[in-house]
Length: 390
Image (cartoon, helix red, strand yellow):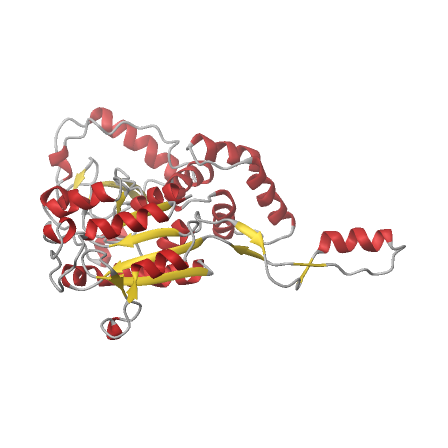
């Protein structure tokens, strides 16, 4: 059964592998779930689907295989759309409902529906036979029948339908929405390079077994260093002004990166990076940090991420003295180029909707400064940016 289910998932373009199928089989052998289709759905999705963007495809494959929702082959395209419009709300008394009889099972319902589709030639309201609205027929909308097929009705009223026949609209996960902490973490996990570092305080089970066997069965415990993500990240956050509109998503990103990277440093700037940045906005004037100090402190292997909407006066990037806050002796683009020439990998994430980028001359200039490596701060943009940093 699982092999057929696995093939059905592959048929729906879910990129699961044999390794994941074996993991699912092993989980069932260990009775992680038992005799529950809902529990099986949860464990199979967790093991077979490694990317949230395939959840909808998995759901369709699961429904097709276990429920057969796609196996009923009836063409309803001949039903005029106006027939399905809600014109009346049929409300029956309890006595009237008791007099209405069902057709006696789903097979009989489907057989009768197919027959009605061939025979009916016009719209019908009320009544107990034809496909229509407001009647006691088993087929249609906004009426009543103890068992029937609901067609074209928005929402349930009596919750008695045996089948709901509406076009099912599936929507992919929107990779253009503003991301949340969970989505950020999922994307950031692609930016991983593990290595063993630190004290040897983790049990090396494989080596322990091998050494114990070589030691005539006497226990010989072996330890090893714990694996850590060795990727180093340097983040520059634009704050104030127009960035106040994007505080929430920046806070989410800030929270996510703190849990994903051991080697993380962050700084703040306003509009464009100049000769100084800062760590604490309350001490930005008393404790600034020179850009040259950052270049001297952090190695080329740090991955650099700039977060900002890049909406400012063009002079703030291109001219000395262009800063709105102080008289900068060198243009912002000069300091940006110094950073970019030092670090091997750098990107700019822009929380401004990409559709508006073309209306800001400063965004065009900043994109040129960062060698077109500017991406929208969306799930898709973050994923693309991470690929550049790898």
